[in-house]
Length: 214
Image (tube, rainbow, N blue to C red; front, side, top):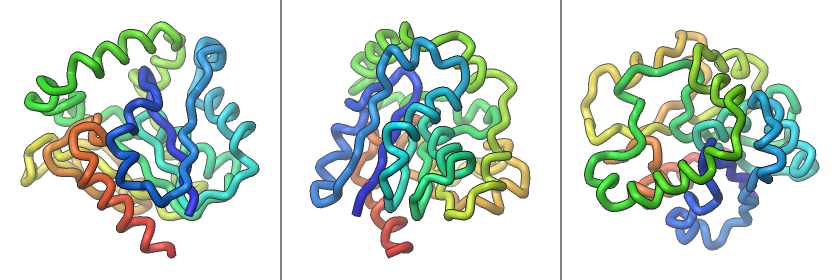
C-alpha cells in the first residue's frame, strides 16, 4: 500500500511525526513544498501543479491532505486525474465554515503543543503570498472540485471536544450536493491539528477507510 500525505499552509512535514508510528508497515510519500514554490504560488492550483509534476506518475491507494493539502488532493483527482483509489482530507474547509471550526487546538492541547505549533506557523507564514491566503481565507468555494471526482472522498474533522454538537455538519456550510459526495468522520477531542492532538484515533479512522477499498 502506498499513500501520499500533503500538509496545509504554514506547516511542515513535522506535523506527521506523531502519526508516523501507526503506519510503520505502509509506504508513504510525505510531500514538502519547496519555499521557492510557495513564494511564487498565487493560488492553490499553483501548488497542485507542482505536486502533480513531481508525484503524478506514481499510483497511490490514497491521497491524504490536511487543510490546504485537502484542496490540493481534490484538485489532483479532479483536474489532473491523478491515479488513486481514495481521497481523504483532514479538517479542510471547502467553503468558509462557522466559528465552531475556526480553532487550531483544544485548550488542553494548546497548553501542551501550542508553543511549538505556533512557532512553526509564524516561521512558515513568511514563505507564502498574501494572494494564496486570500484563496483559502476569504470568500472561497472548492465544492465544485467534487463534481469531477470519481473516487470516494472522505472528510475527517475534529469534533472540538464537543461529542454531541448538533450543528457539526451544518456549520461546515456545505451545500447538499457536496455533502452527498462526502463520507464524514470525526476525531474525538481534537481540532484542526488532529494528527498532533489525537494521532491514535486518526490513524484508526484512516486504516478503516483504507480497508474499504482493499
